[in-house]
Length: 357
Image 1 (cartoon, one colour):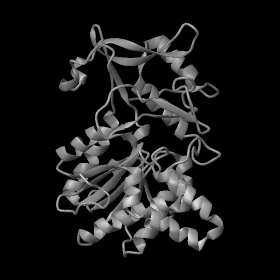
Image 2 (image 1 turned 90 degrees about the vertical axis):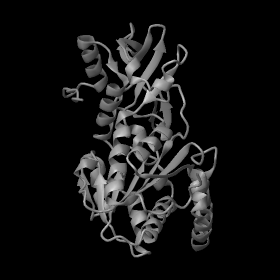
Image 3 (image 1 turned 45 degrees about the horizontal axis):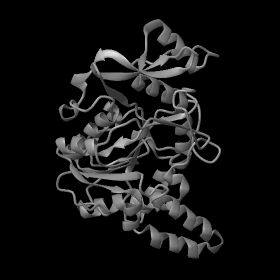
């Protein structure tokens, strides 16, 4: 997909209006892809002064346990030589910094590779992990060694495609311009039945499903690398472990949900990750699907409660904050249930801690 050209001093919303007026409605996938590319290229969206906070920024415990999980997999796989740590969308580099510190305690010092498209975030990542090597996409990461890969809140920002069952059959949901000049959703006029999985084609009128070709392609690539060269991977995001219907498109700005179509490029657009589909993709490439667990259960199985108690004893003046951060990561009504952790591994690599299939 070619990026839309936004003239200096012109908002992305105005550019979209001109594009739609000239060529017709655009897909949600194009709207989301262009909006997020614009959004991430211009700011650091993380932290209390940004738009949202991710798990690594909440507590060092998150990155430490990710690093310990990877180190445990590497040790039990026989300590293969010269593995690469690969992170997709590494934020400020906080997760990698904490994970690498934990890995080093077990003799694991992998070569570090970041896949990042934002120059703003790359600057922060260099400060956190100076030895990191940068790539615009996963295809640029060399293929010749085992990988230990992490993707935290990466898949949710990839563009989704929405398909709705109408009286005339399946149609793609598009973004058009309403009479008042605002953006509005509308079913397209082109038949899209062939794009719907066969098992779902007979769904009742009004049924809406989301697919994410970019997430599928990412899993296809990662699983293929694991099968060929060895390694393990963690995908951590909010989403569902079983198939579902309905729109999950949402936007966040200044830590509050906002209307997804209102200000393209000024808010973070995301959608829930379909982990069930992604597990099938991984297995189709002969990678091992280790399981998909709720984040809270996974972190507790890895010992976050014990780690929180240690940190609280070392810094009693911060004990309240440490325990509150732990709760935010694991509590069912916060991040513990909505967020999922999916583990993958190469054939012949061990099962992963925290997953019970």
